[in-house]
Amino acid sequence: MSDILELDGVTKRFGGITAVDGATFGIEAGTITGLIGPNGAGKTTTFNLISGFYEPDEGTIYYDGTDLQELMVPSRTEHLIWGSAAGITGGVIGGAAGIGVLSLGALGGVGTTITGAGVGAGVYAGQHRLAQTRPDHTNSRPYQLARAGLVRTFQITRELSEMTARENLMLAPLDQTGEHLLNAWFRRDAVTTEEQAVRRRADEMLETLEIDHVAEEPAGNLSGGQRKLLELGRVLMLEPQVILLDEPVAGVNPTLTQKLTDRIETLRDEGYTFCIVEHDMDVIMSLSDRIIVMNEGQKLVEGPPDVIREDERVIDAYLGVA
Picture (cartoon, rainbow, N blue to C red):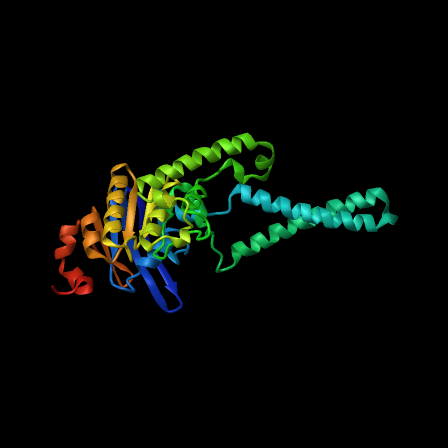
């Protein structure tokens, strides 16, 4: 198998602090990789870099062979939307001005309208160019990574608390027909049919994760473990290739922990790729196919769990002397 995620000399600084310092490693497709290290080792920053929340100061991160920054540049659709919006706005302003300048006649009004549209488009192009040349500009659009199949969860779950567990799952799938206003008005049958299909998928997911009994419960009322399972389910509704899990069993009782880890192993066997940050050494050692240990922002060592467990460098840096 090849690496679906690759970090090549990745560095991230915050002022005078180097949180990640030349990290270089890969995540093999179809495996579970544990990412461990002491507090301050750079694990969370690395996750934020991989998921597009931060841009590396140096180095490159590749997802399925493509630079993440290339995946997150403004899309052609985005340019068209904002360019059109700017042009229409300028046109409306110009049209209003044209109406006010009756002495110029109809031709003058049309000319002013066209001029206004041009000004609006020019303003958009200018601000975009300015943004691109700013030293702190970033093409950070994490949602585009999610659409490409690279998704993550968070240590503190981010469920939509007022919506039910089922509704949280139904919201996740991409490009739903009903998301477009005109479809909601003029293609109601198609919207209804798709919504019924998404609801069935959501119910199957709830049953698979064994939380179907809380389907109608507001997500904010669920236990910590149930919210972890719900977040995993919401990620799976996106049908991703790679899933980054940040402390998936933190605060979860042993029964739900076992349920969650069993499900992760099953998904790995189905072809999903996982990278997991976790402080529970029993869980990470039993769950991971391979473990990467970070210390002071760098990769300290990597290997299978039985090798990592006995490595003196890891014991000194993280695990402590038994």
